Image 1: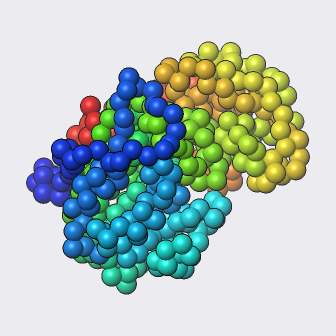
Image 2 (image 1 turned 90 degrees about the vertical axis):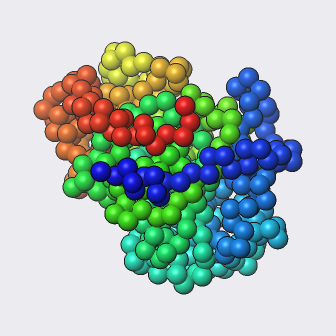
Length: 418
């Protein structure tokens, strides 16, 4: 029984700054959709409260270029200039604190030229090794503020998990500043990871599209998956509803990684990223990664067959493109472009499965990556083996429904927004 763990450790600063004066108005994007609601991020609420929960603490921040204010200033720069908070270190994830590294890279240990703060590299570090970094940094509280995109295999949520675990080992407090799930928090979708397939693209049994914010995920990790929960505080947003897409936030979009250029990329990513597990291009090296998919030798038949599935909210256009890097670099290839015309009804995971099935049927050259990376992305052998056996989209999607229902029940307890 884990109720005592949850009540003891999953503390949430839900009322933090609830009665505080709003932060000063700043220049930014046009007024958001949403009937005049103004979203305030976890950082905005923390700053409006004068950083009171961090009083007397030496603070380190786990962040990347997405940790910004409404006027597009980085929170590290803002906190560094504010005498009310003692910011002493920064911790960078994959791609780095300032975002200079490509996929599978980081910036290493260095001093930030803008602030002079020491920047420590967390990428591919976990357990005691990462705990030792937190200890060496001298911080008392580790703060996490990174924009997620809503997919289990996007690595920042596992940076969150690893940092929570290691902060606990190092005896540090942990605080999560919440940001929107850009593709809404309406529902969890897709297969649930099996623990034997755990990697950095999925540490724990979470569904492929989790439908949660990072603060909600932190509560879930603490209550269900960490062997020793960390002293956790979450600073929730105000003005966010589970049905909101990113454009309702009024916040500028900063690409969380080089191949996540727009919120529209995030909308399709939890489905079309599955093409990383095949020999087809997933659109890296184009201006529309994860929206353009293709390979040499594919013609119009794939788009025709995919449209014939009647996938909700999406149309597939015959497309030709030449990636500037990654698969098929410098070669013109054929395939499809994913056009979402009704995001309310669009199911990215079902769409990804339908596209895999029709790619396999319409192109004789189709193959899975030899390392069965598709199993790591989907979290088990189910998707690959069912597609290889000739299953259709409904059959594959039906294969994970029981496990998904279990995850949805577990997830419900940790949601902060109704």
